[in-house]
Amino acid sequence: MKTPILVIFVDALPYDRAVNIVNALKADTHLKSIPGVGYSINVKAEMFAGLKPDDVGYFCEWNYNPDNRSVWWVNLGIPILERLSSFSHFIDRVIHKLITLARGERIYAIPYRILPMLKCSGLTAYERNFEAPTFLSDGNFERVLYSEEGVNDKKVFDKALEKLRKEKNNRLFVSTAELDGVMHHYGMSCQRYEDQISLIEESTVNLIQEFLSIHGDQAKYFLFSDHGMAPVLEPVDFDISQYCGQPGNESYVYVIDATFYRVWINNEELRTKIIDAFGSVNHVGHILTEEERIKYGLVDRRHGDIIFLLNESKQFAPNFFGKEISKAMHGYDPELKSQAGAFVSNTNSGFGGNISSMSIHETIRAFL
Image (cartoon, rainbow, N blue to C red; front, side):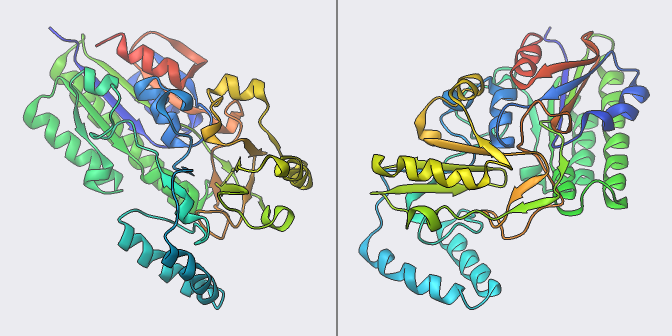
């Protein structure tokens, strides 16, 4: 008989905020979940499929696609859109929302001039349409996903508990994401955050206890998160085009994430100028070294010829996802204390140590 397994993924739950869950369950394991490099889209690929960026084929959601070429009427329309957007931030947001509806994918605040050269390539590893094998697909898990139920943790947990009581699922996976949004928008020093943590504590404990009562001592549970967060204290305004001219398929292309600045170089004569430009912000971050790229699985240059990472508590603003800074962010150096997520289980792995996102995948897969 297959081992009954419950897996709960709570996006952004910090290591130290899982203590009440551990105590209530008398859990055998409470470890620091050390993320891979980048944001959730890549950390989840490591956790659920054991794939680093080079293996999964993308780093972050939006990437340069050298095969993209704008049609002539798009090129003519770009200056018009830029002119209209210059009148107000409101007009710019409306235009971006209209383009989002037309394209069928969210383009956030990506500049019109760069958008035609980019491709949204990131896929969430626990979604049903993820193409690579995961421990969820290989273990035949039933899934309750926030992407299908809405970004509402109470609704997701209520649905999972109802499903479990009705179907007595032997393998069940639950994903939530509301906490991540609360931390980004409200920070971690407010009642809204504390209320969300309390909801997660109560809901996870109830679901796990119900699962154990149904399946007995042989049942295993794993509750984990992809990262913690750090308060954002300083915006960093850096526009590389002021140093290197307009981007394009014949010069260079860039993407500004919240904590990463990625550049693809199409004209080698610009390389020195581009690297020198980052010298103006080297007091708030650094360009990833070749050793770091090997360590993180970022060797392939399709992820960017240059990848600049900000120091903790700083955020690029504006960036391709918005004009303002968040209250809290992740996506910094994965080994920082603030970036540690939580890993809780009734398997005997101990307390206080570390478990990497790749090791989470290996650990759960061993029980399939």
